[in-house]
Length: 71
Image (cartoon, rainbow, N blue to C red; front, side, top):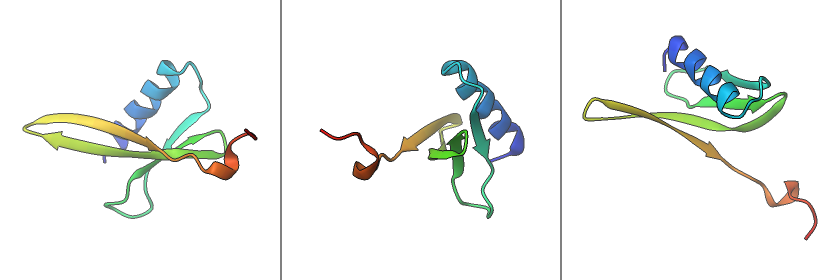
């Protein structure tokens, strides 16, 4: 993903969730997914999909059982 796309995605997330603590970071190696953070906390990964010339992005968030409050 290009740096310009990453910047636009970060801007979108910050506006959509009204939270300037979102940070979208480029991967260390080409081909790896882009990482999304909320402050210092890892939130998930962003993937770019292109189908018949149309581009979309998907945000995958994993929530660990150990991070949930007690039942």
